[in-house]
Length: 480
Ligand code: C2O
Ligand code: CU
Figure 1 (cartoon, rainbow, N blue to C red):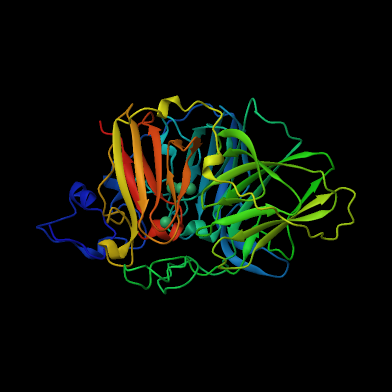
Figure 2 (cartoon, rainbow, N blue to C red):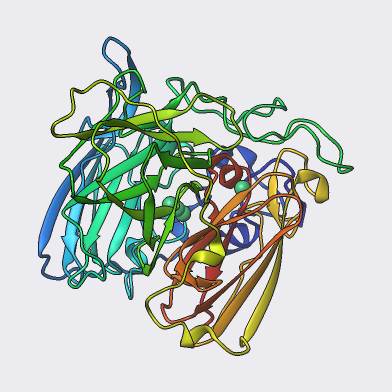
């Protein structure tokens, strides 16, 4: 059949939908701007299963004003008019129902980032893969088991909607935490992008695509330049404040909800004890700073032993824009900012040791899949990001079988980081259990192992939204 150079339509689906009449394709039928399946009605989606929920929430996706500093509103898209979106909180093992109403001018879905959705592939929120997107004026009822415990989040999985602020925290409390703490606070890190998100193909912004090192240069798709860094939806001039009492152990739940930026975080004169990553618990490890990529989460415990009002600093590691700031404000302090220092111990992946057993991931895998992450010059159009030279949705699926131990070996042949995320599973990487992991640039290599114990069609992609949108994604279906 004729190749479709500029179309985002998947070959297999064209065949399945019978959209080809006499070998000709009627081009106008296809949406070329989103990753939606061309003909969602033709594809069979998993059947949603409903039970008896313990908690119910209602989210209305709507156009609304976003206020990140006084007198500086802009038009974004939010859930229930709030940015970040309302917190969804449940206890491990509970059943959660969320009714999502689409009051946007476009179709939408929600993905529950961090939930494994055991047996609930239909609730995963990937348009064209696990459901037909929710049309304007319609609603969809999501329901899932709150598993695993930890710091998670939810966001739109359609196009660039995440970068219009359609996101919020999803906190699943452990029944039996391995650490002690007095208070629990969530910090959501994000770019300040008051304009409509668009793929930027002019070279040289944020991602640092300047030198492709022999692969040719130029405009690889990237995010538009951010205008600042937000913590809990606030610019540094009017920071979010965390009130603490001397002696408290404060659990900070860090969520990087940015579309593109990897951040480093540190708190002046305070140590961060890392206790969880992407939900699962790790043996506590004290550091001064850590890096967090788009989609990743870390929980840290901070001991309040140094009265004052201290900056919590978040800076983009590529220094593409200014840093974000929140405040750690002690009870007795006068509220004036104090400046201190941040030490140099930075968290490394090798510092993380999961509390849960990794036995299931040891030994030789049943299936090993090598995946090369790269930009378009490796074989595409130059305006794509690819996995093994293919840009989604014009891709072959990565098929696996139930009960296999699967290994993905990723090599990054580009100069920028790719935070890779697998839906429906947590994977072992080093001695940690995660669902999103940064594959460093310049031939960085990361190997993940997981057990195929959750049949369905799952998405695997870069969580840099603009890399995903321009191709860095695959479907991972279970073979029947
Ligand atoms: Cu947080 Cu497929 O996404
Ligand atoms: Cu990427």
